[in-house]
Image (cartoon, rainbow, N blue to C red):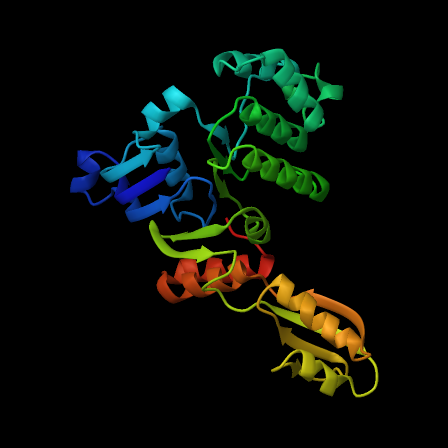
Length: 327
């Protein structure tokens, strides 16, 4: 569905080139996103995520290499089929109302049954009660939900979200996650490109994560198993002789230093974890708590950036890992 071959993008004219002032935002990007895939875009500030998104939307063209969406140039694909897009910054005429904005987007997008679709997404995204409110009076969260509603009005095969849940509270982030899963189930060919600060949310939404740094792809991470580190957990238990029983259910379990009934354990998958916990319970051990360690994406993101990028990118990767996200 999406294909990039040796794509480079530079900004600046001929004089900037002579002066050595041209900025290379992307440098030799080659990617393929097949139909039915959700991919996350992660990376430090200046990694090239926004430039890549603009290329996919057809807003700009590459300096070198080829970009295709659905076998077509991105601009041609967007004009013929449309691309659902949630930008990182929502900018709308302040005098528009919520309903007026959605009516306008439905008309511009030639949406079938526009009134029904507008009503549906206003209800789903909690906008019906503020339908007559002007854009200038919207909170950041309401404005973000309006942007999500406009992206969902038409039946598109490709959706691109650039910090699409920024400004939403945890409840609405979870609701949007469910809506995206429903959107994908409605058509198995649909492709979601999801750029986010929140690495843990990327893990929940996407099957693959593309780690960008300094205009290059540093790593493509499979988030659904196969190639990543085995998930690790902190297990707290009660019961006599608990250590021996934990080790029987979780071979290789390591005691947490200074804590008599806490262990670091590993499980290859959620199903494997369930079976091992069941075996532990059958041995008479009371499980007090089990908490996952830092997610696979966060671990590999920090390792990939720190091992291959410049000192500035390494420092930002370390900060992102500590905060659980990235710019």
